[in-house]
Image (cartoon, rainbow, N blue to C red):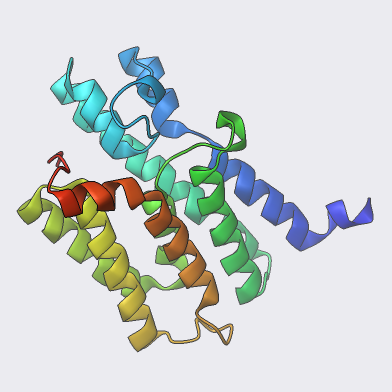
Length: 207
């Protein structure tokens, strides 16, 4: 059982468990009295919080949506920062980021269901590859304002992060872009239903 007390393993476990906390679900239940797992897209992310709560309380919906984005992003940030302060290697930090996103998308508290991973991925990226992440965030916000489609804006923002990282941080200081590709793949994969609706012209405008 000594491996459970290994520095890296403990951080990996904490990262996954922290990522698994369904903040959107909790906030919507506590402050709006709704179960977002039973409404809208049934996702636990900010977009579904906004969509579902907006039906009864538009002003509260915006506040809860913003709070969900921030808290979900922090799931990808805090454990990395703590590990970084304790001298964890770059590879360990990336593994923590991957596990935080996995936790959000496949939460142990929700029967391995969860959200799309965008905010949590952004939270990890902003620490590990800040410049590409800022570029991606600008693209995300700009596309959101222009297109008014949350999923498309998120995917375009993520794509901008990946391309920018390849241009400015190729290798991610670990000799490979694999950790970033894994996070991006998880997020793209969770968006497959959205992508199908986008292709069919059926994706609703939310933001």
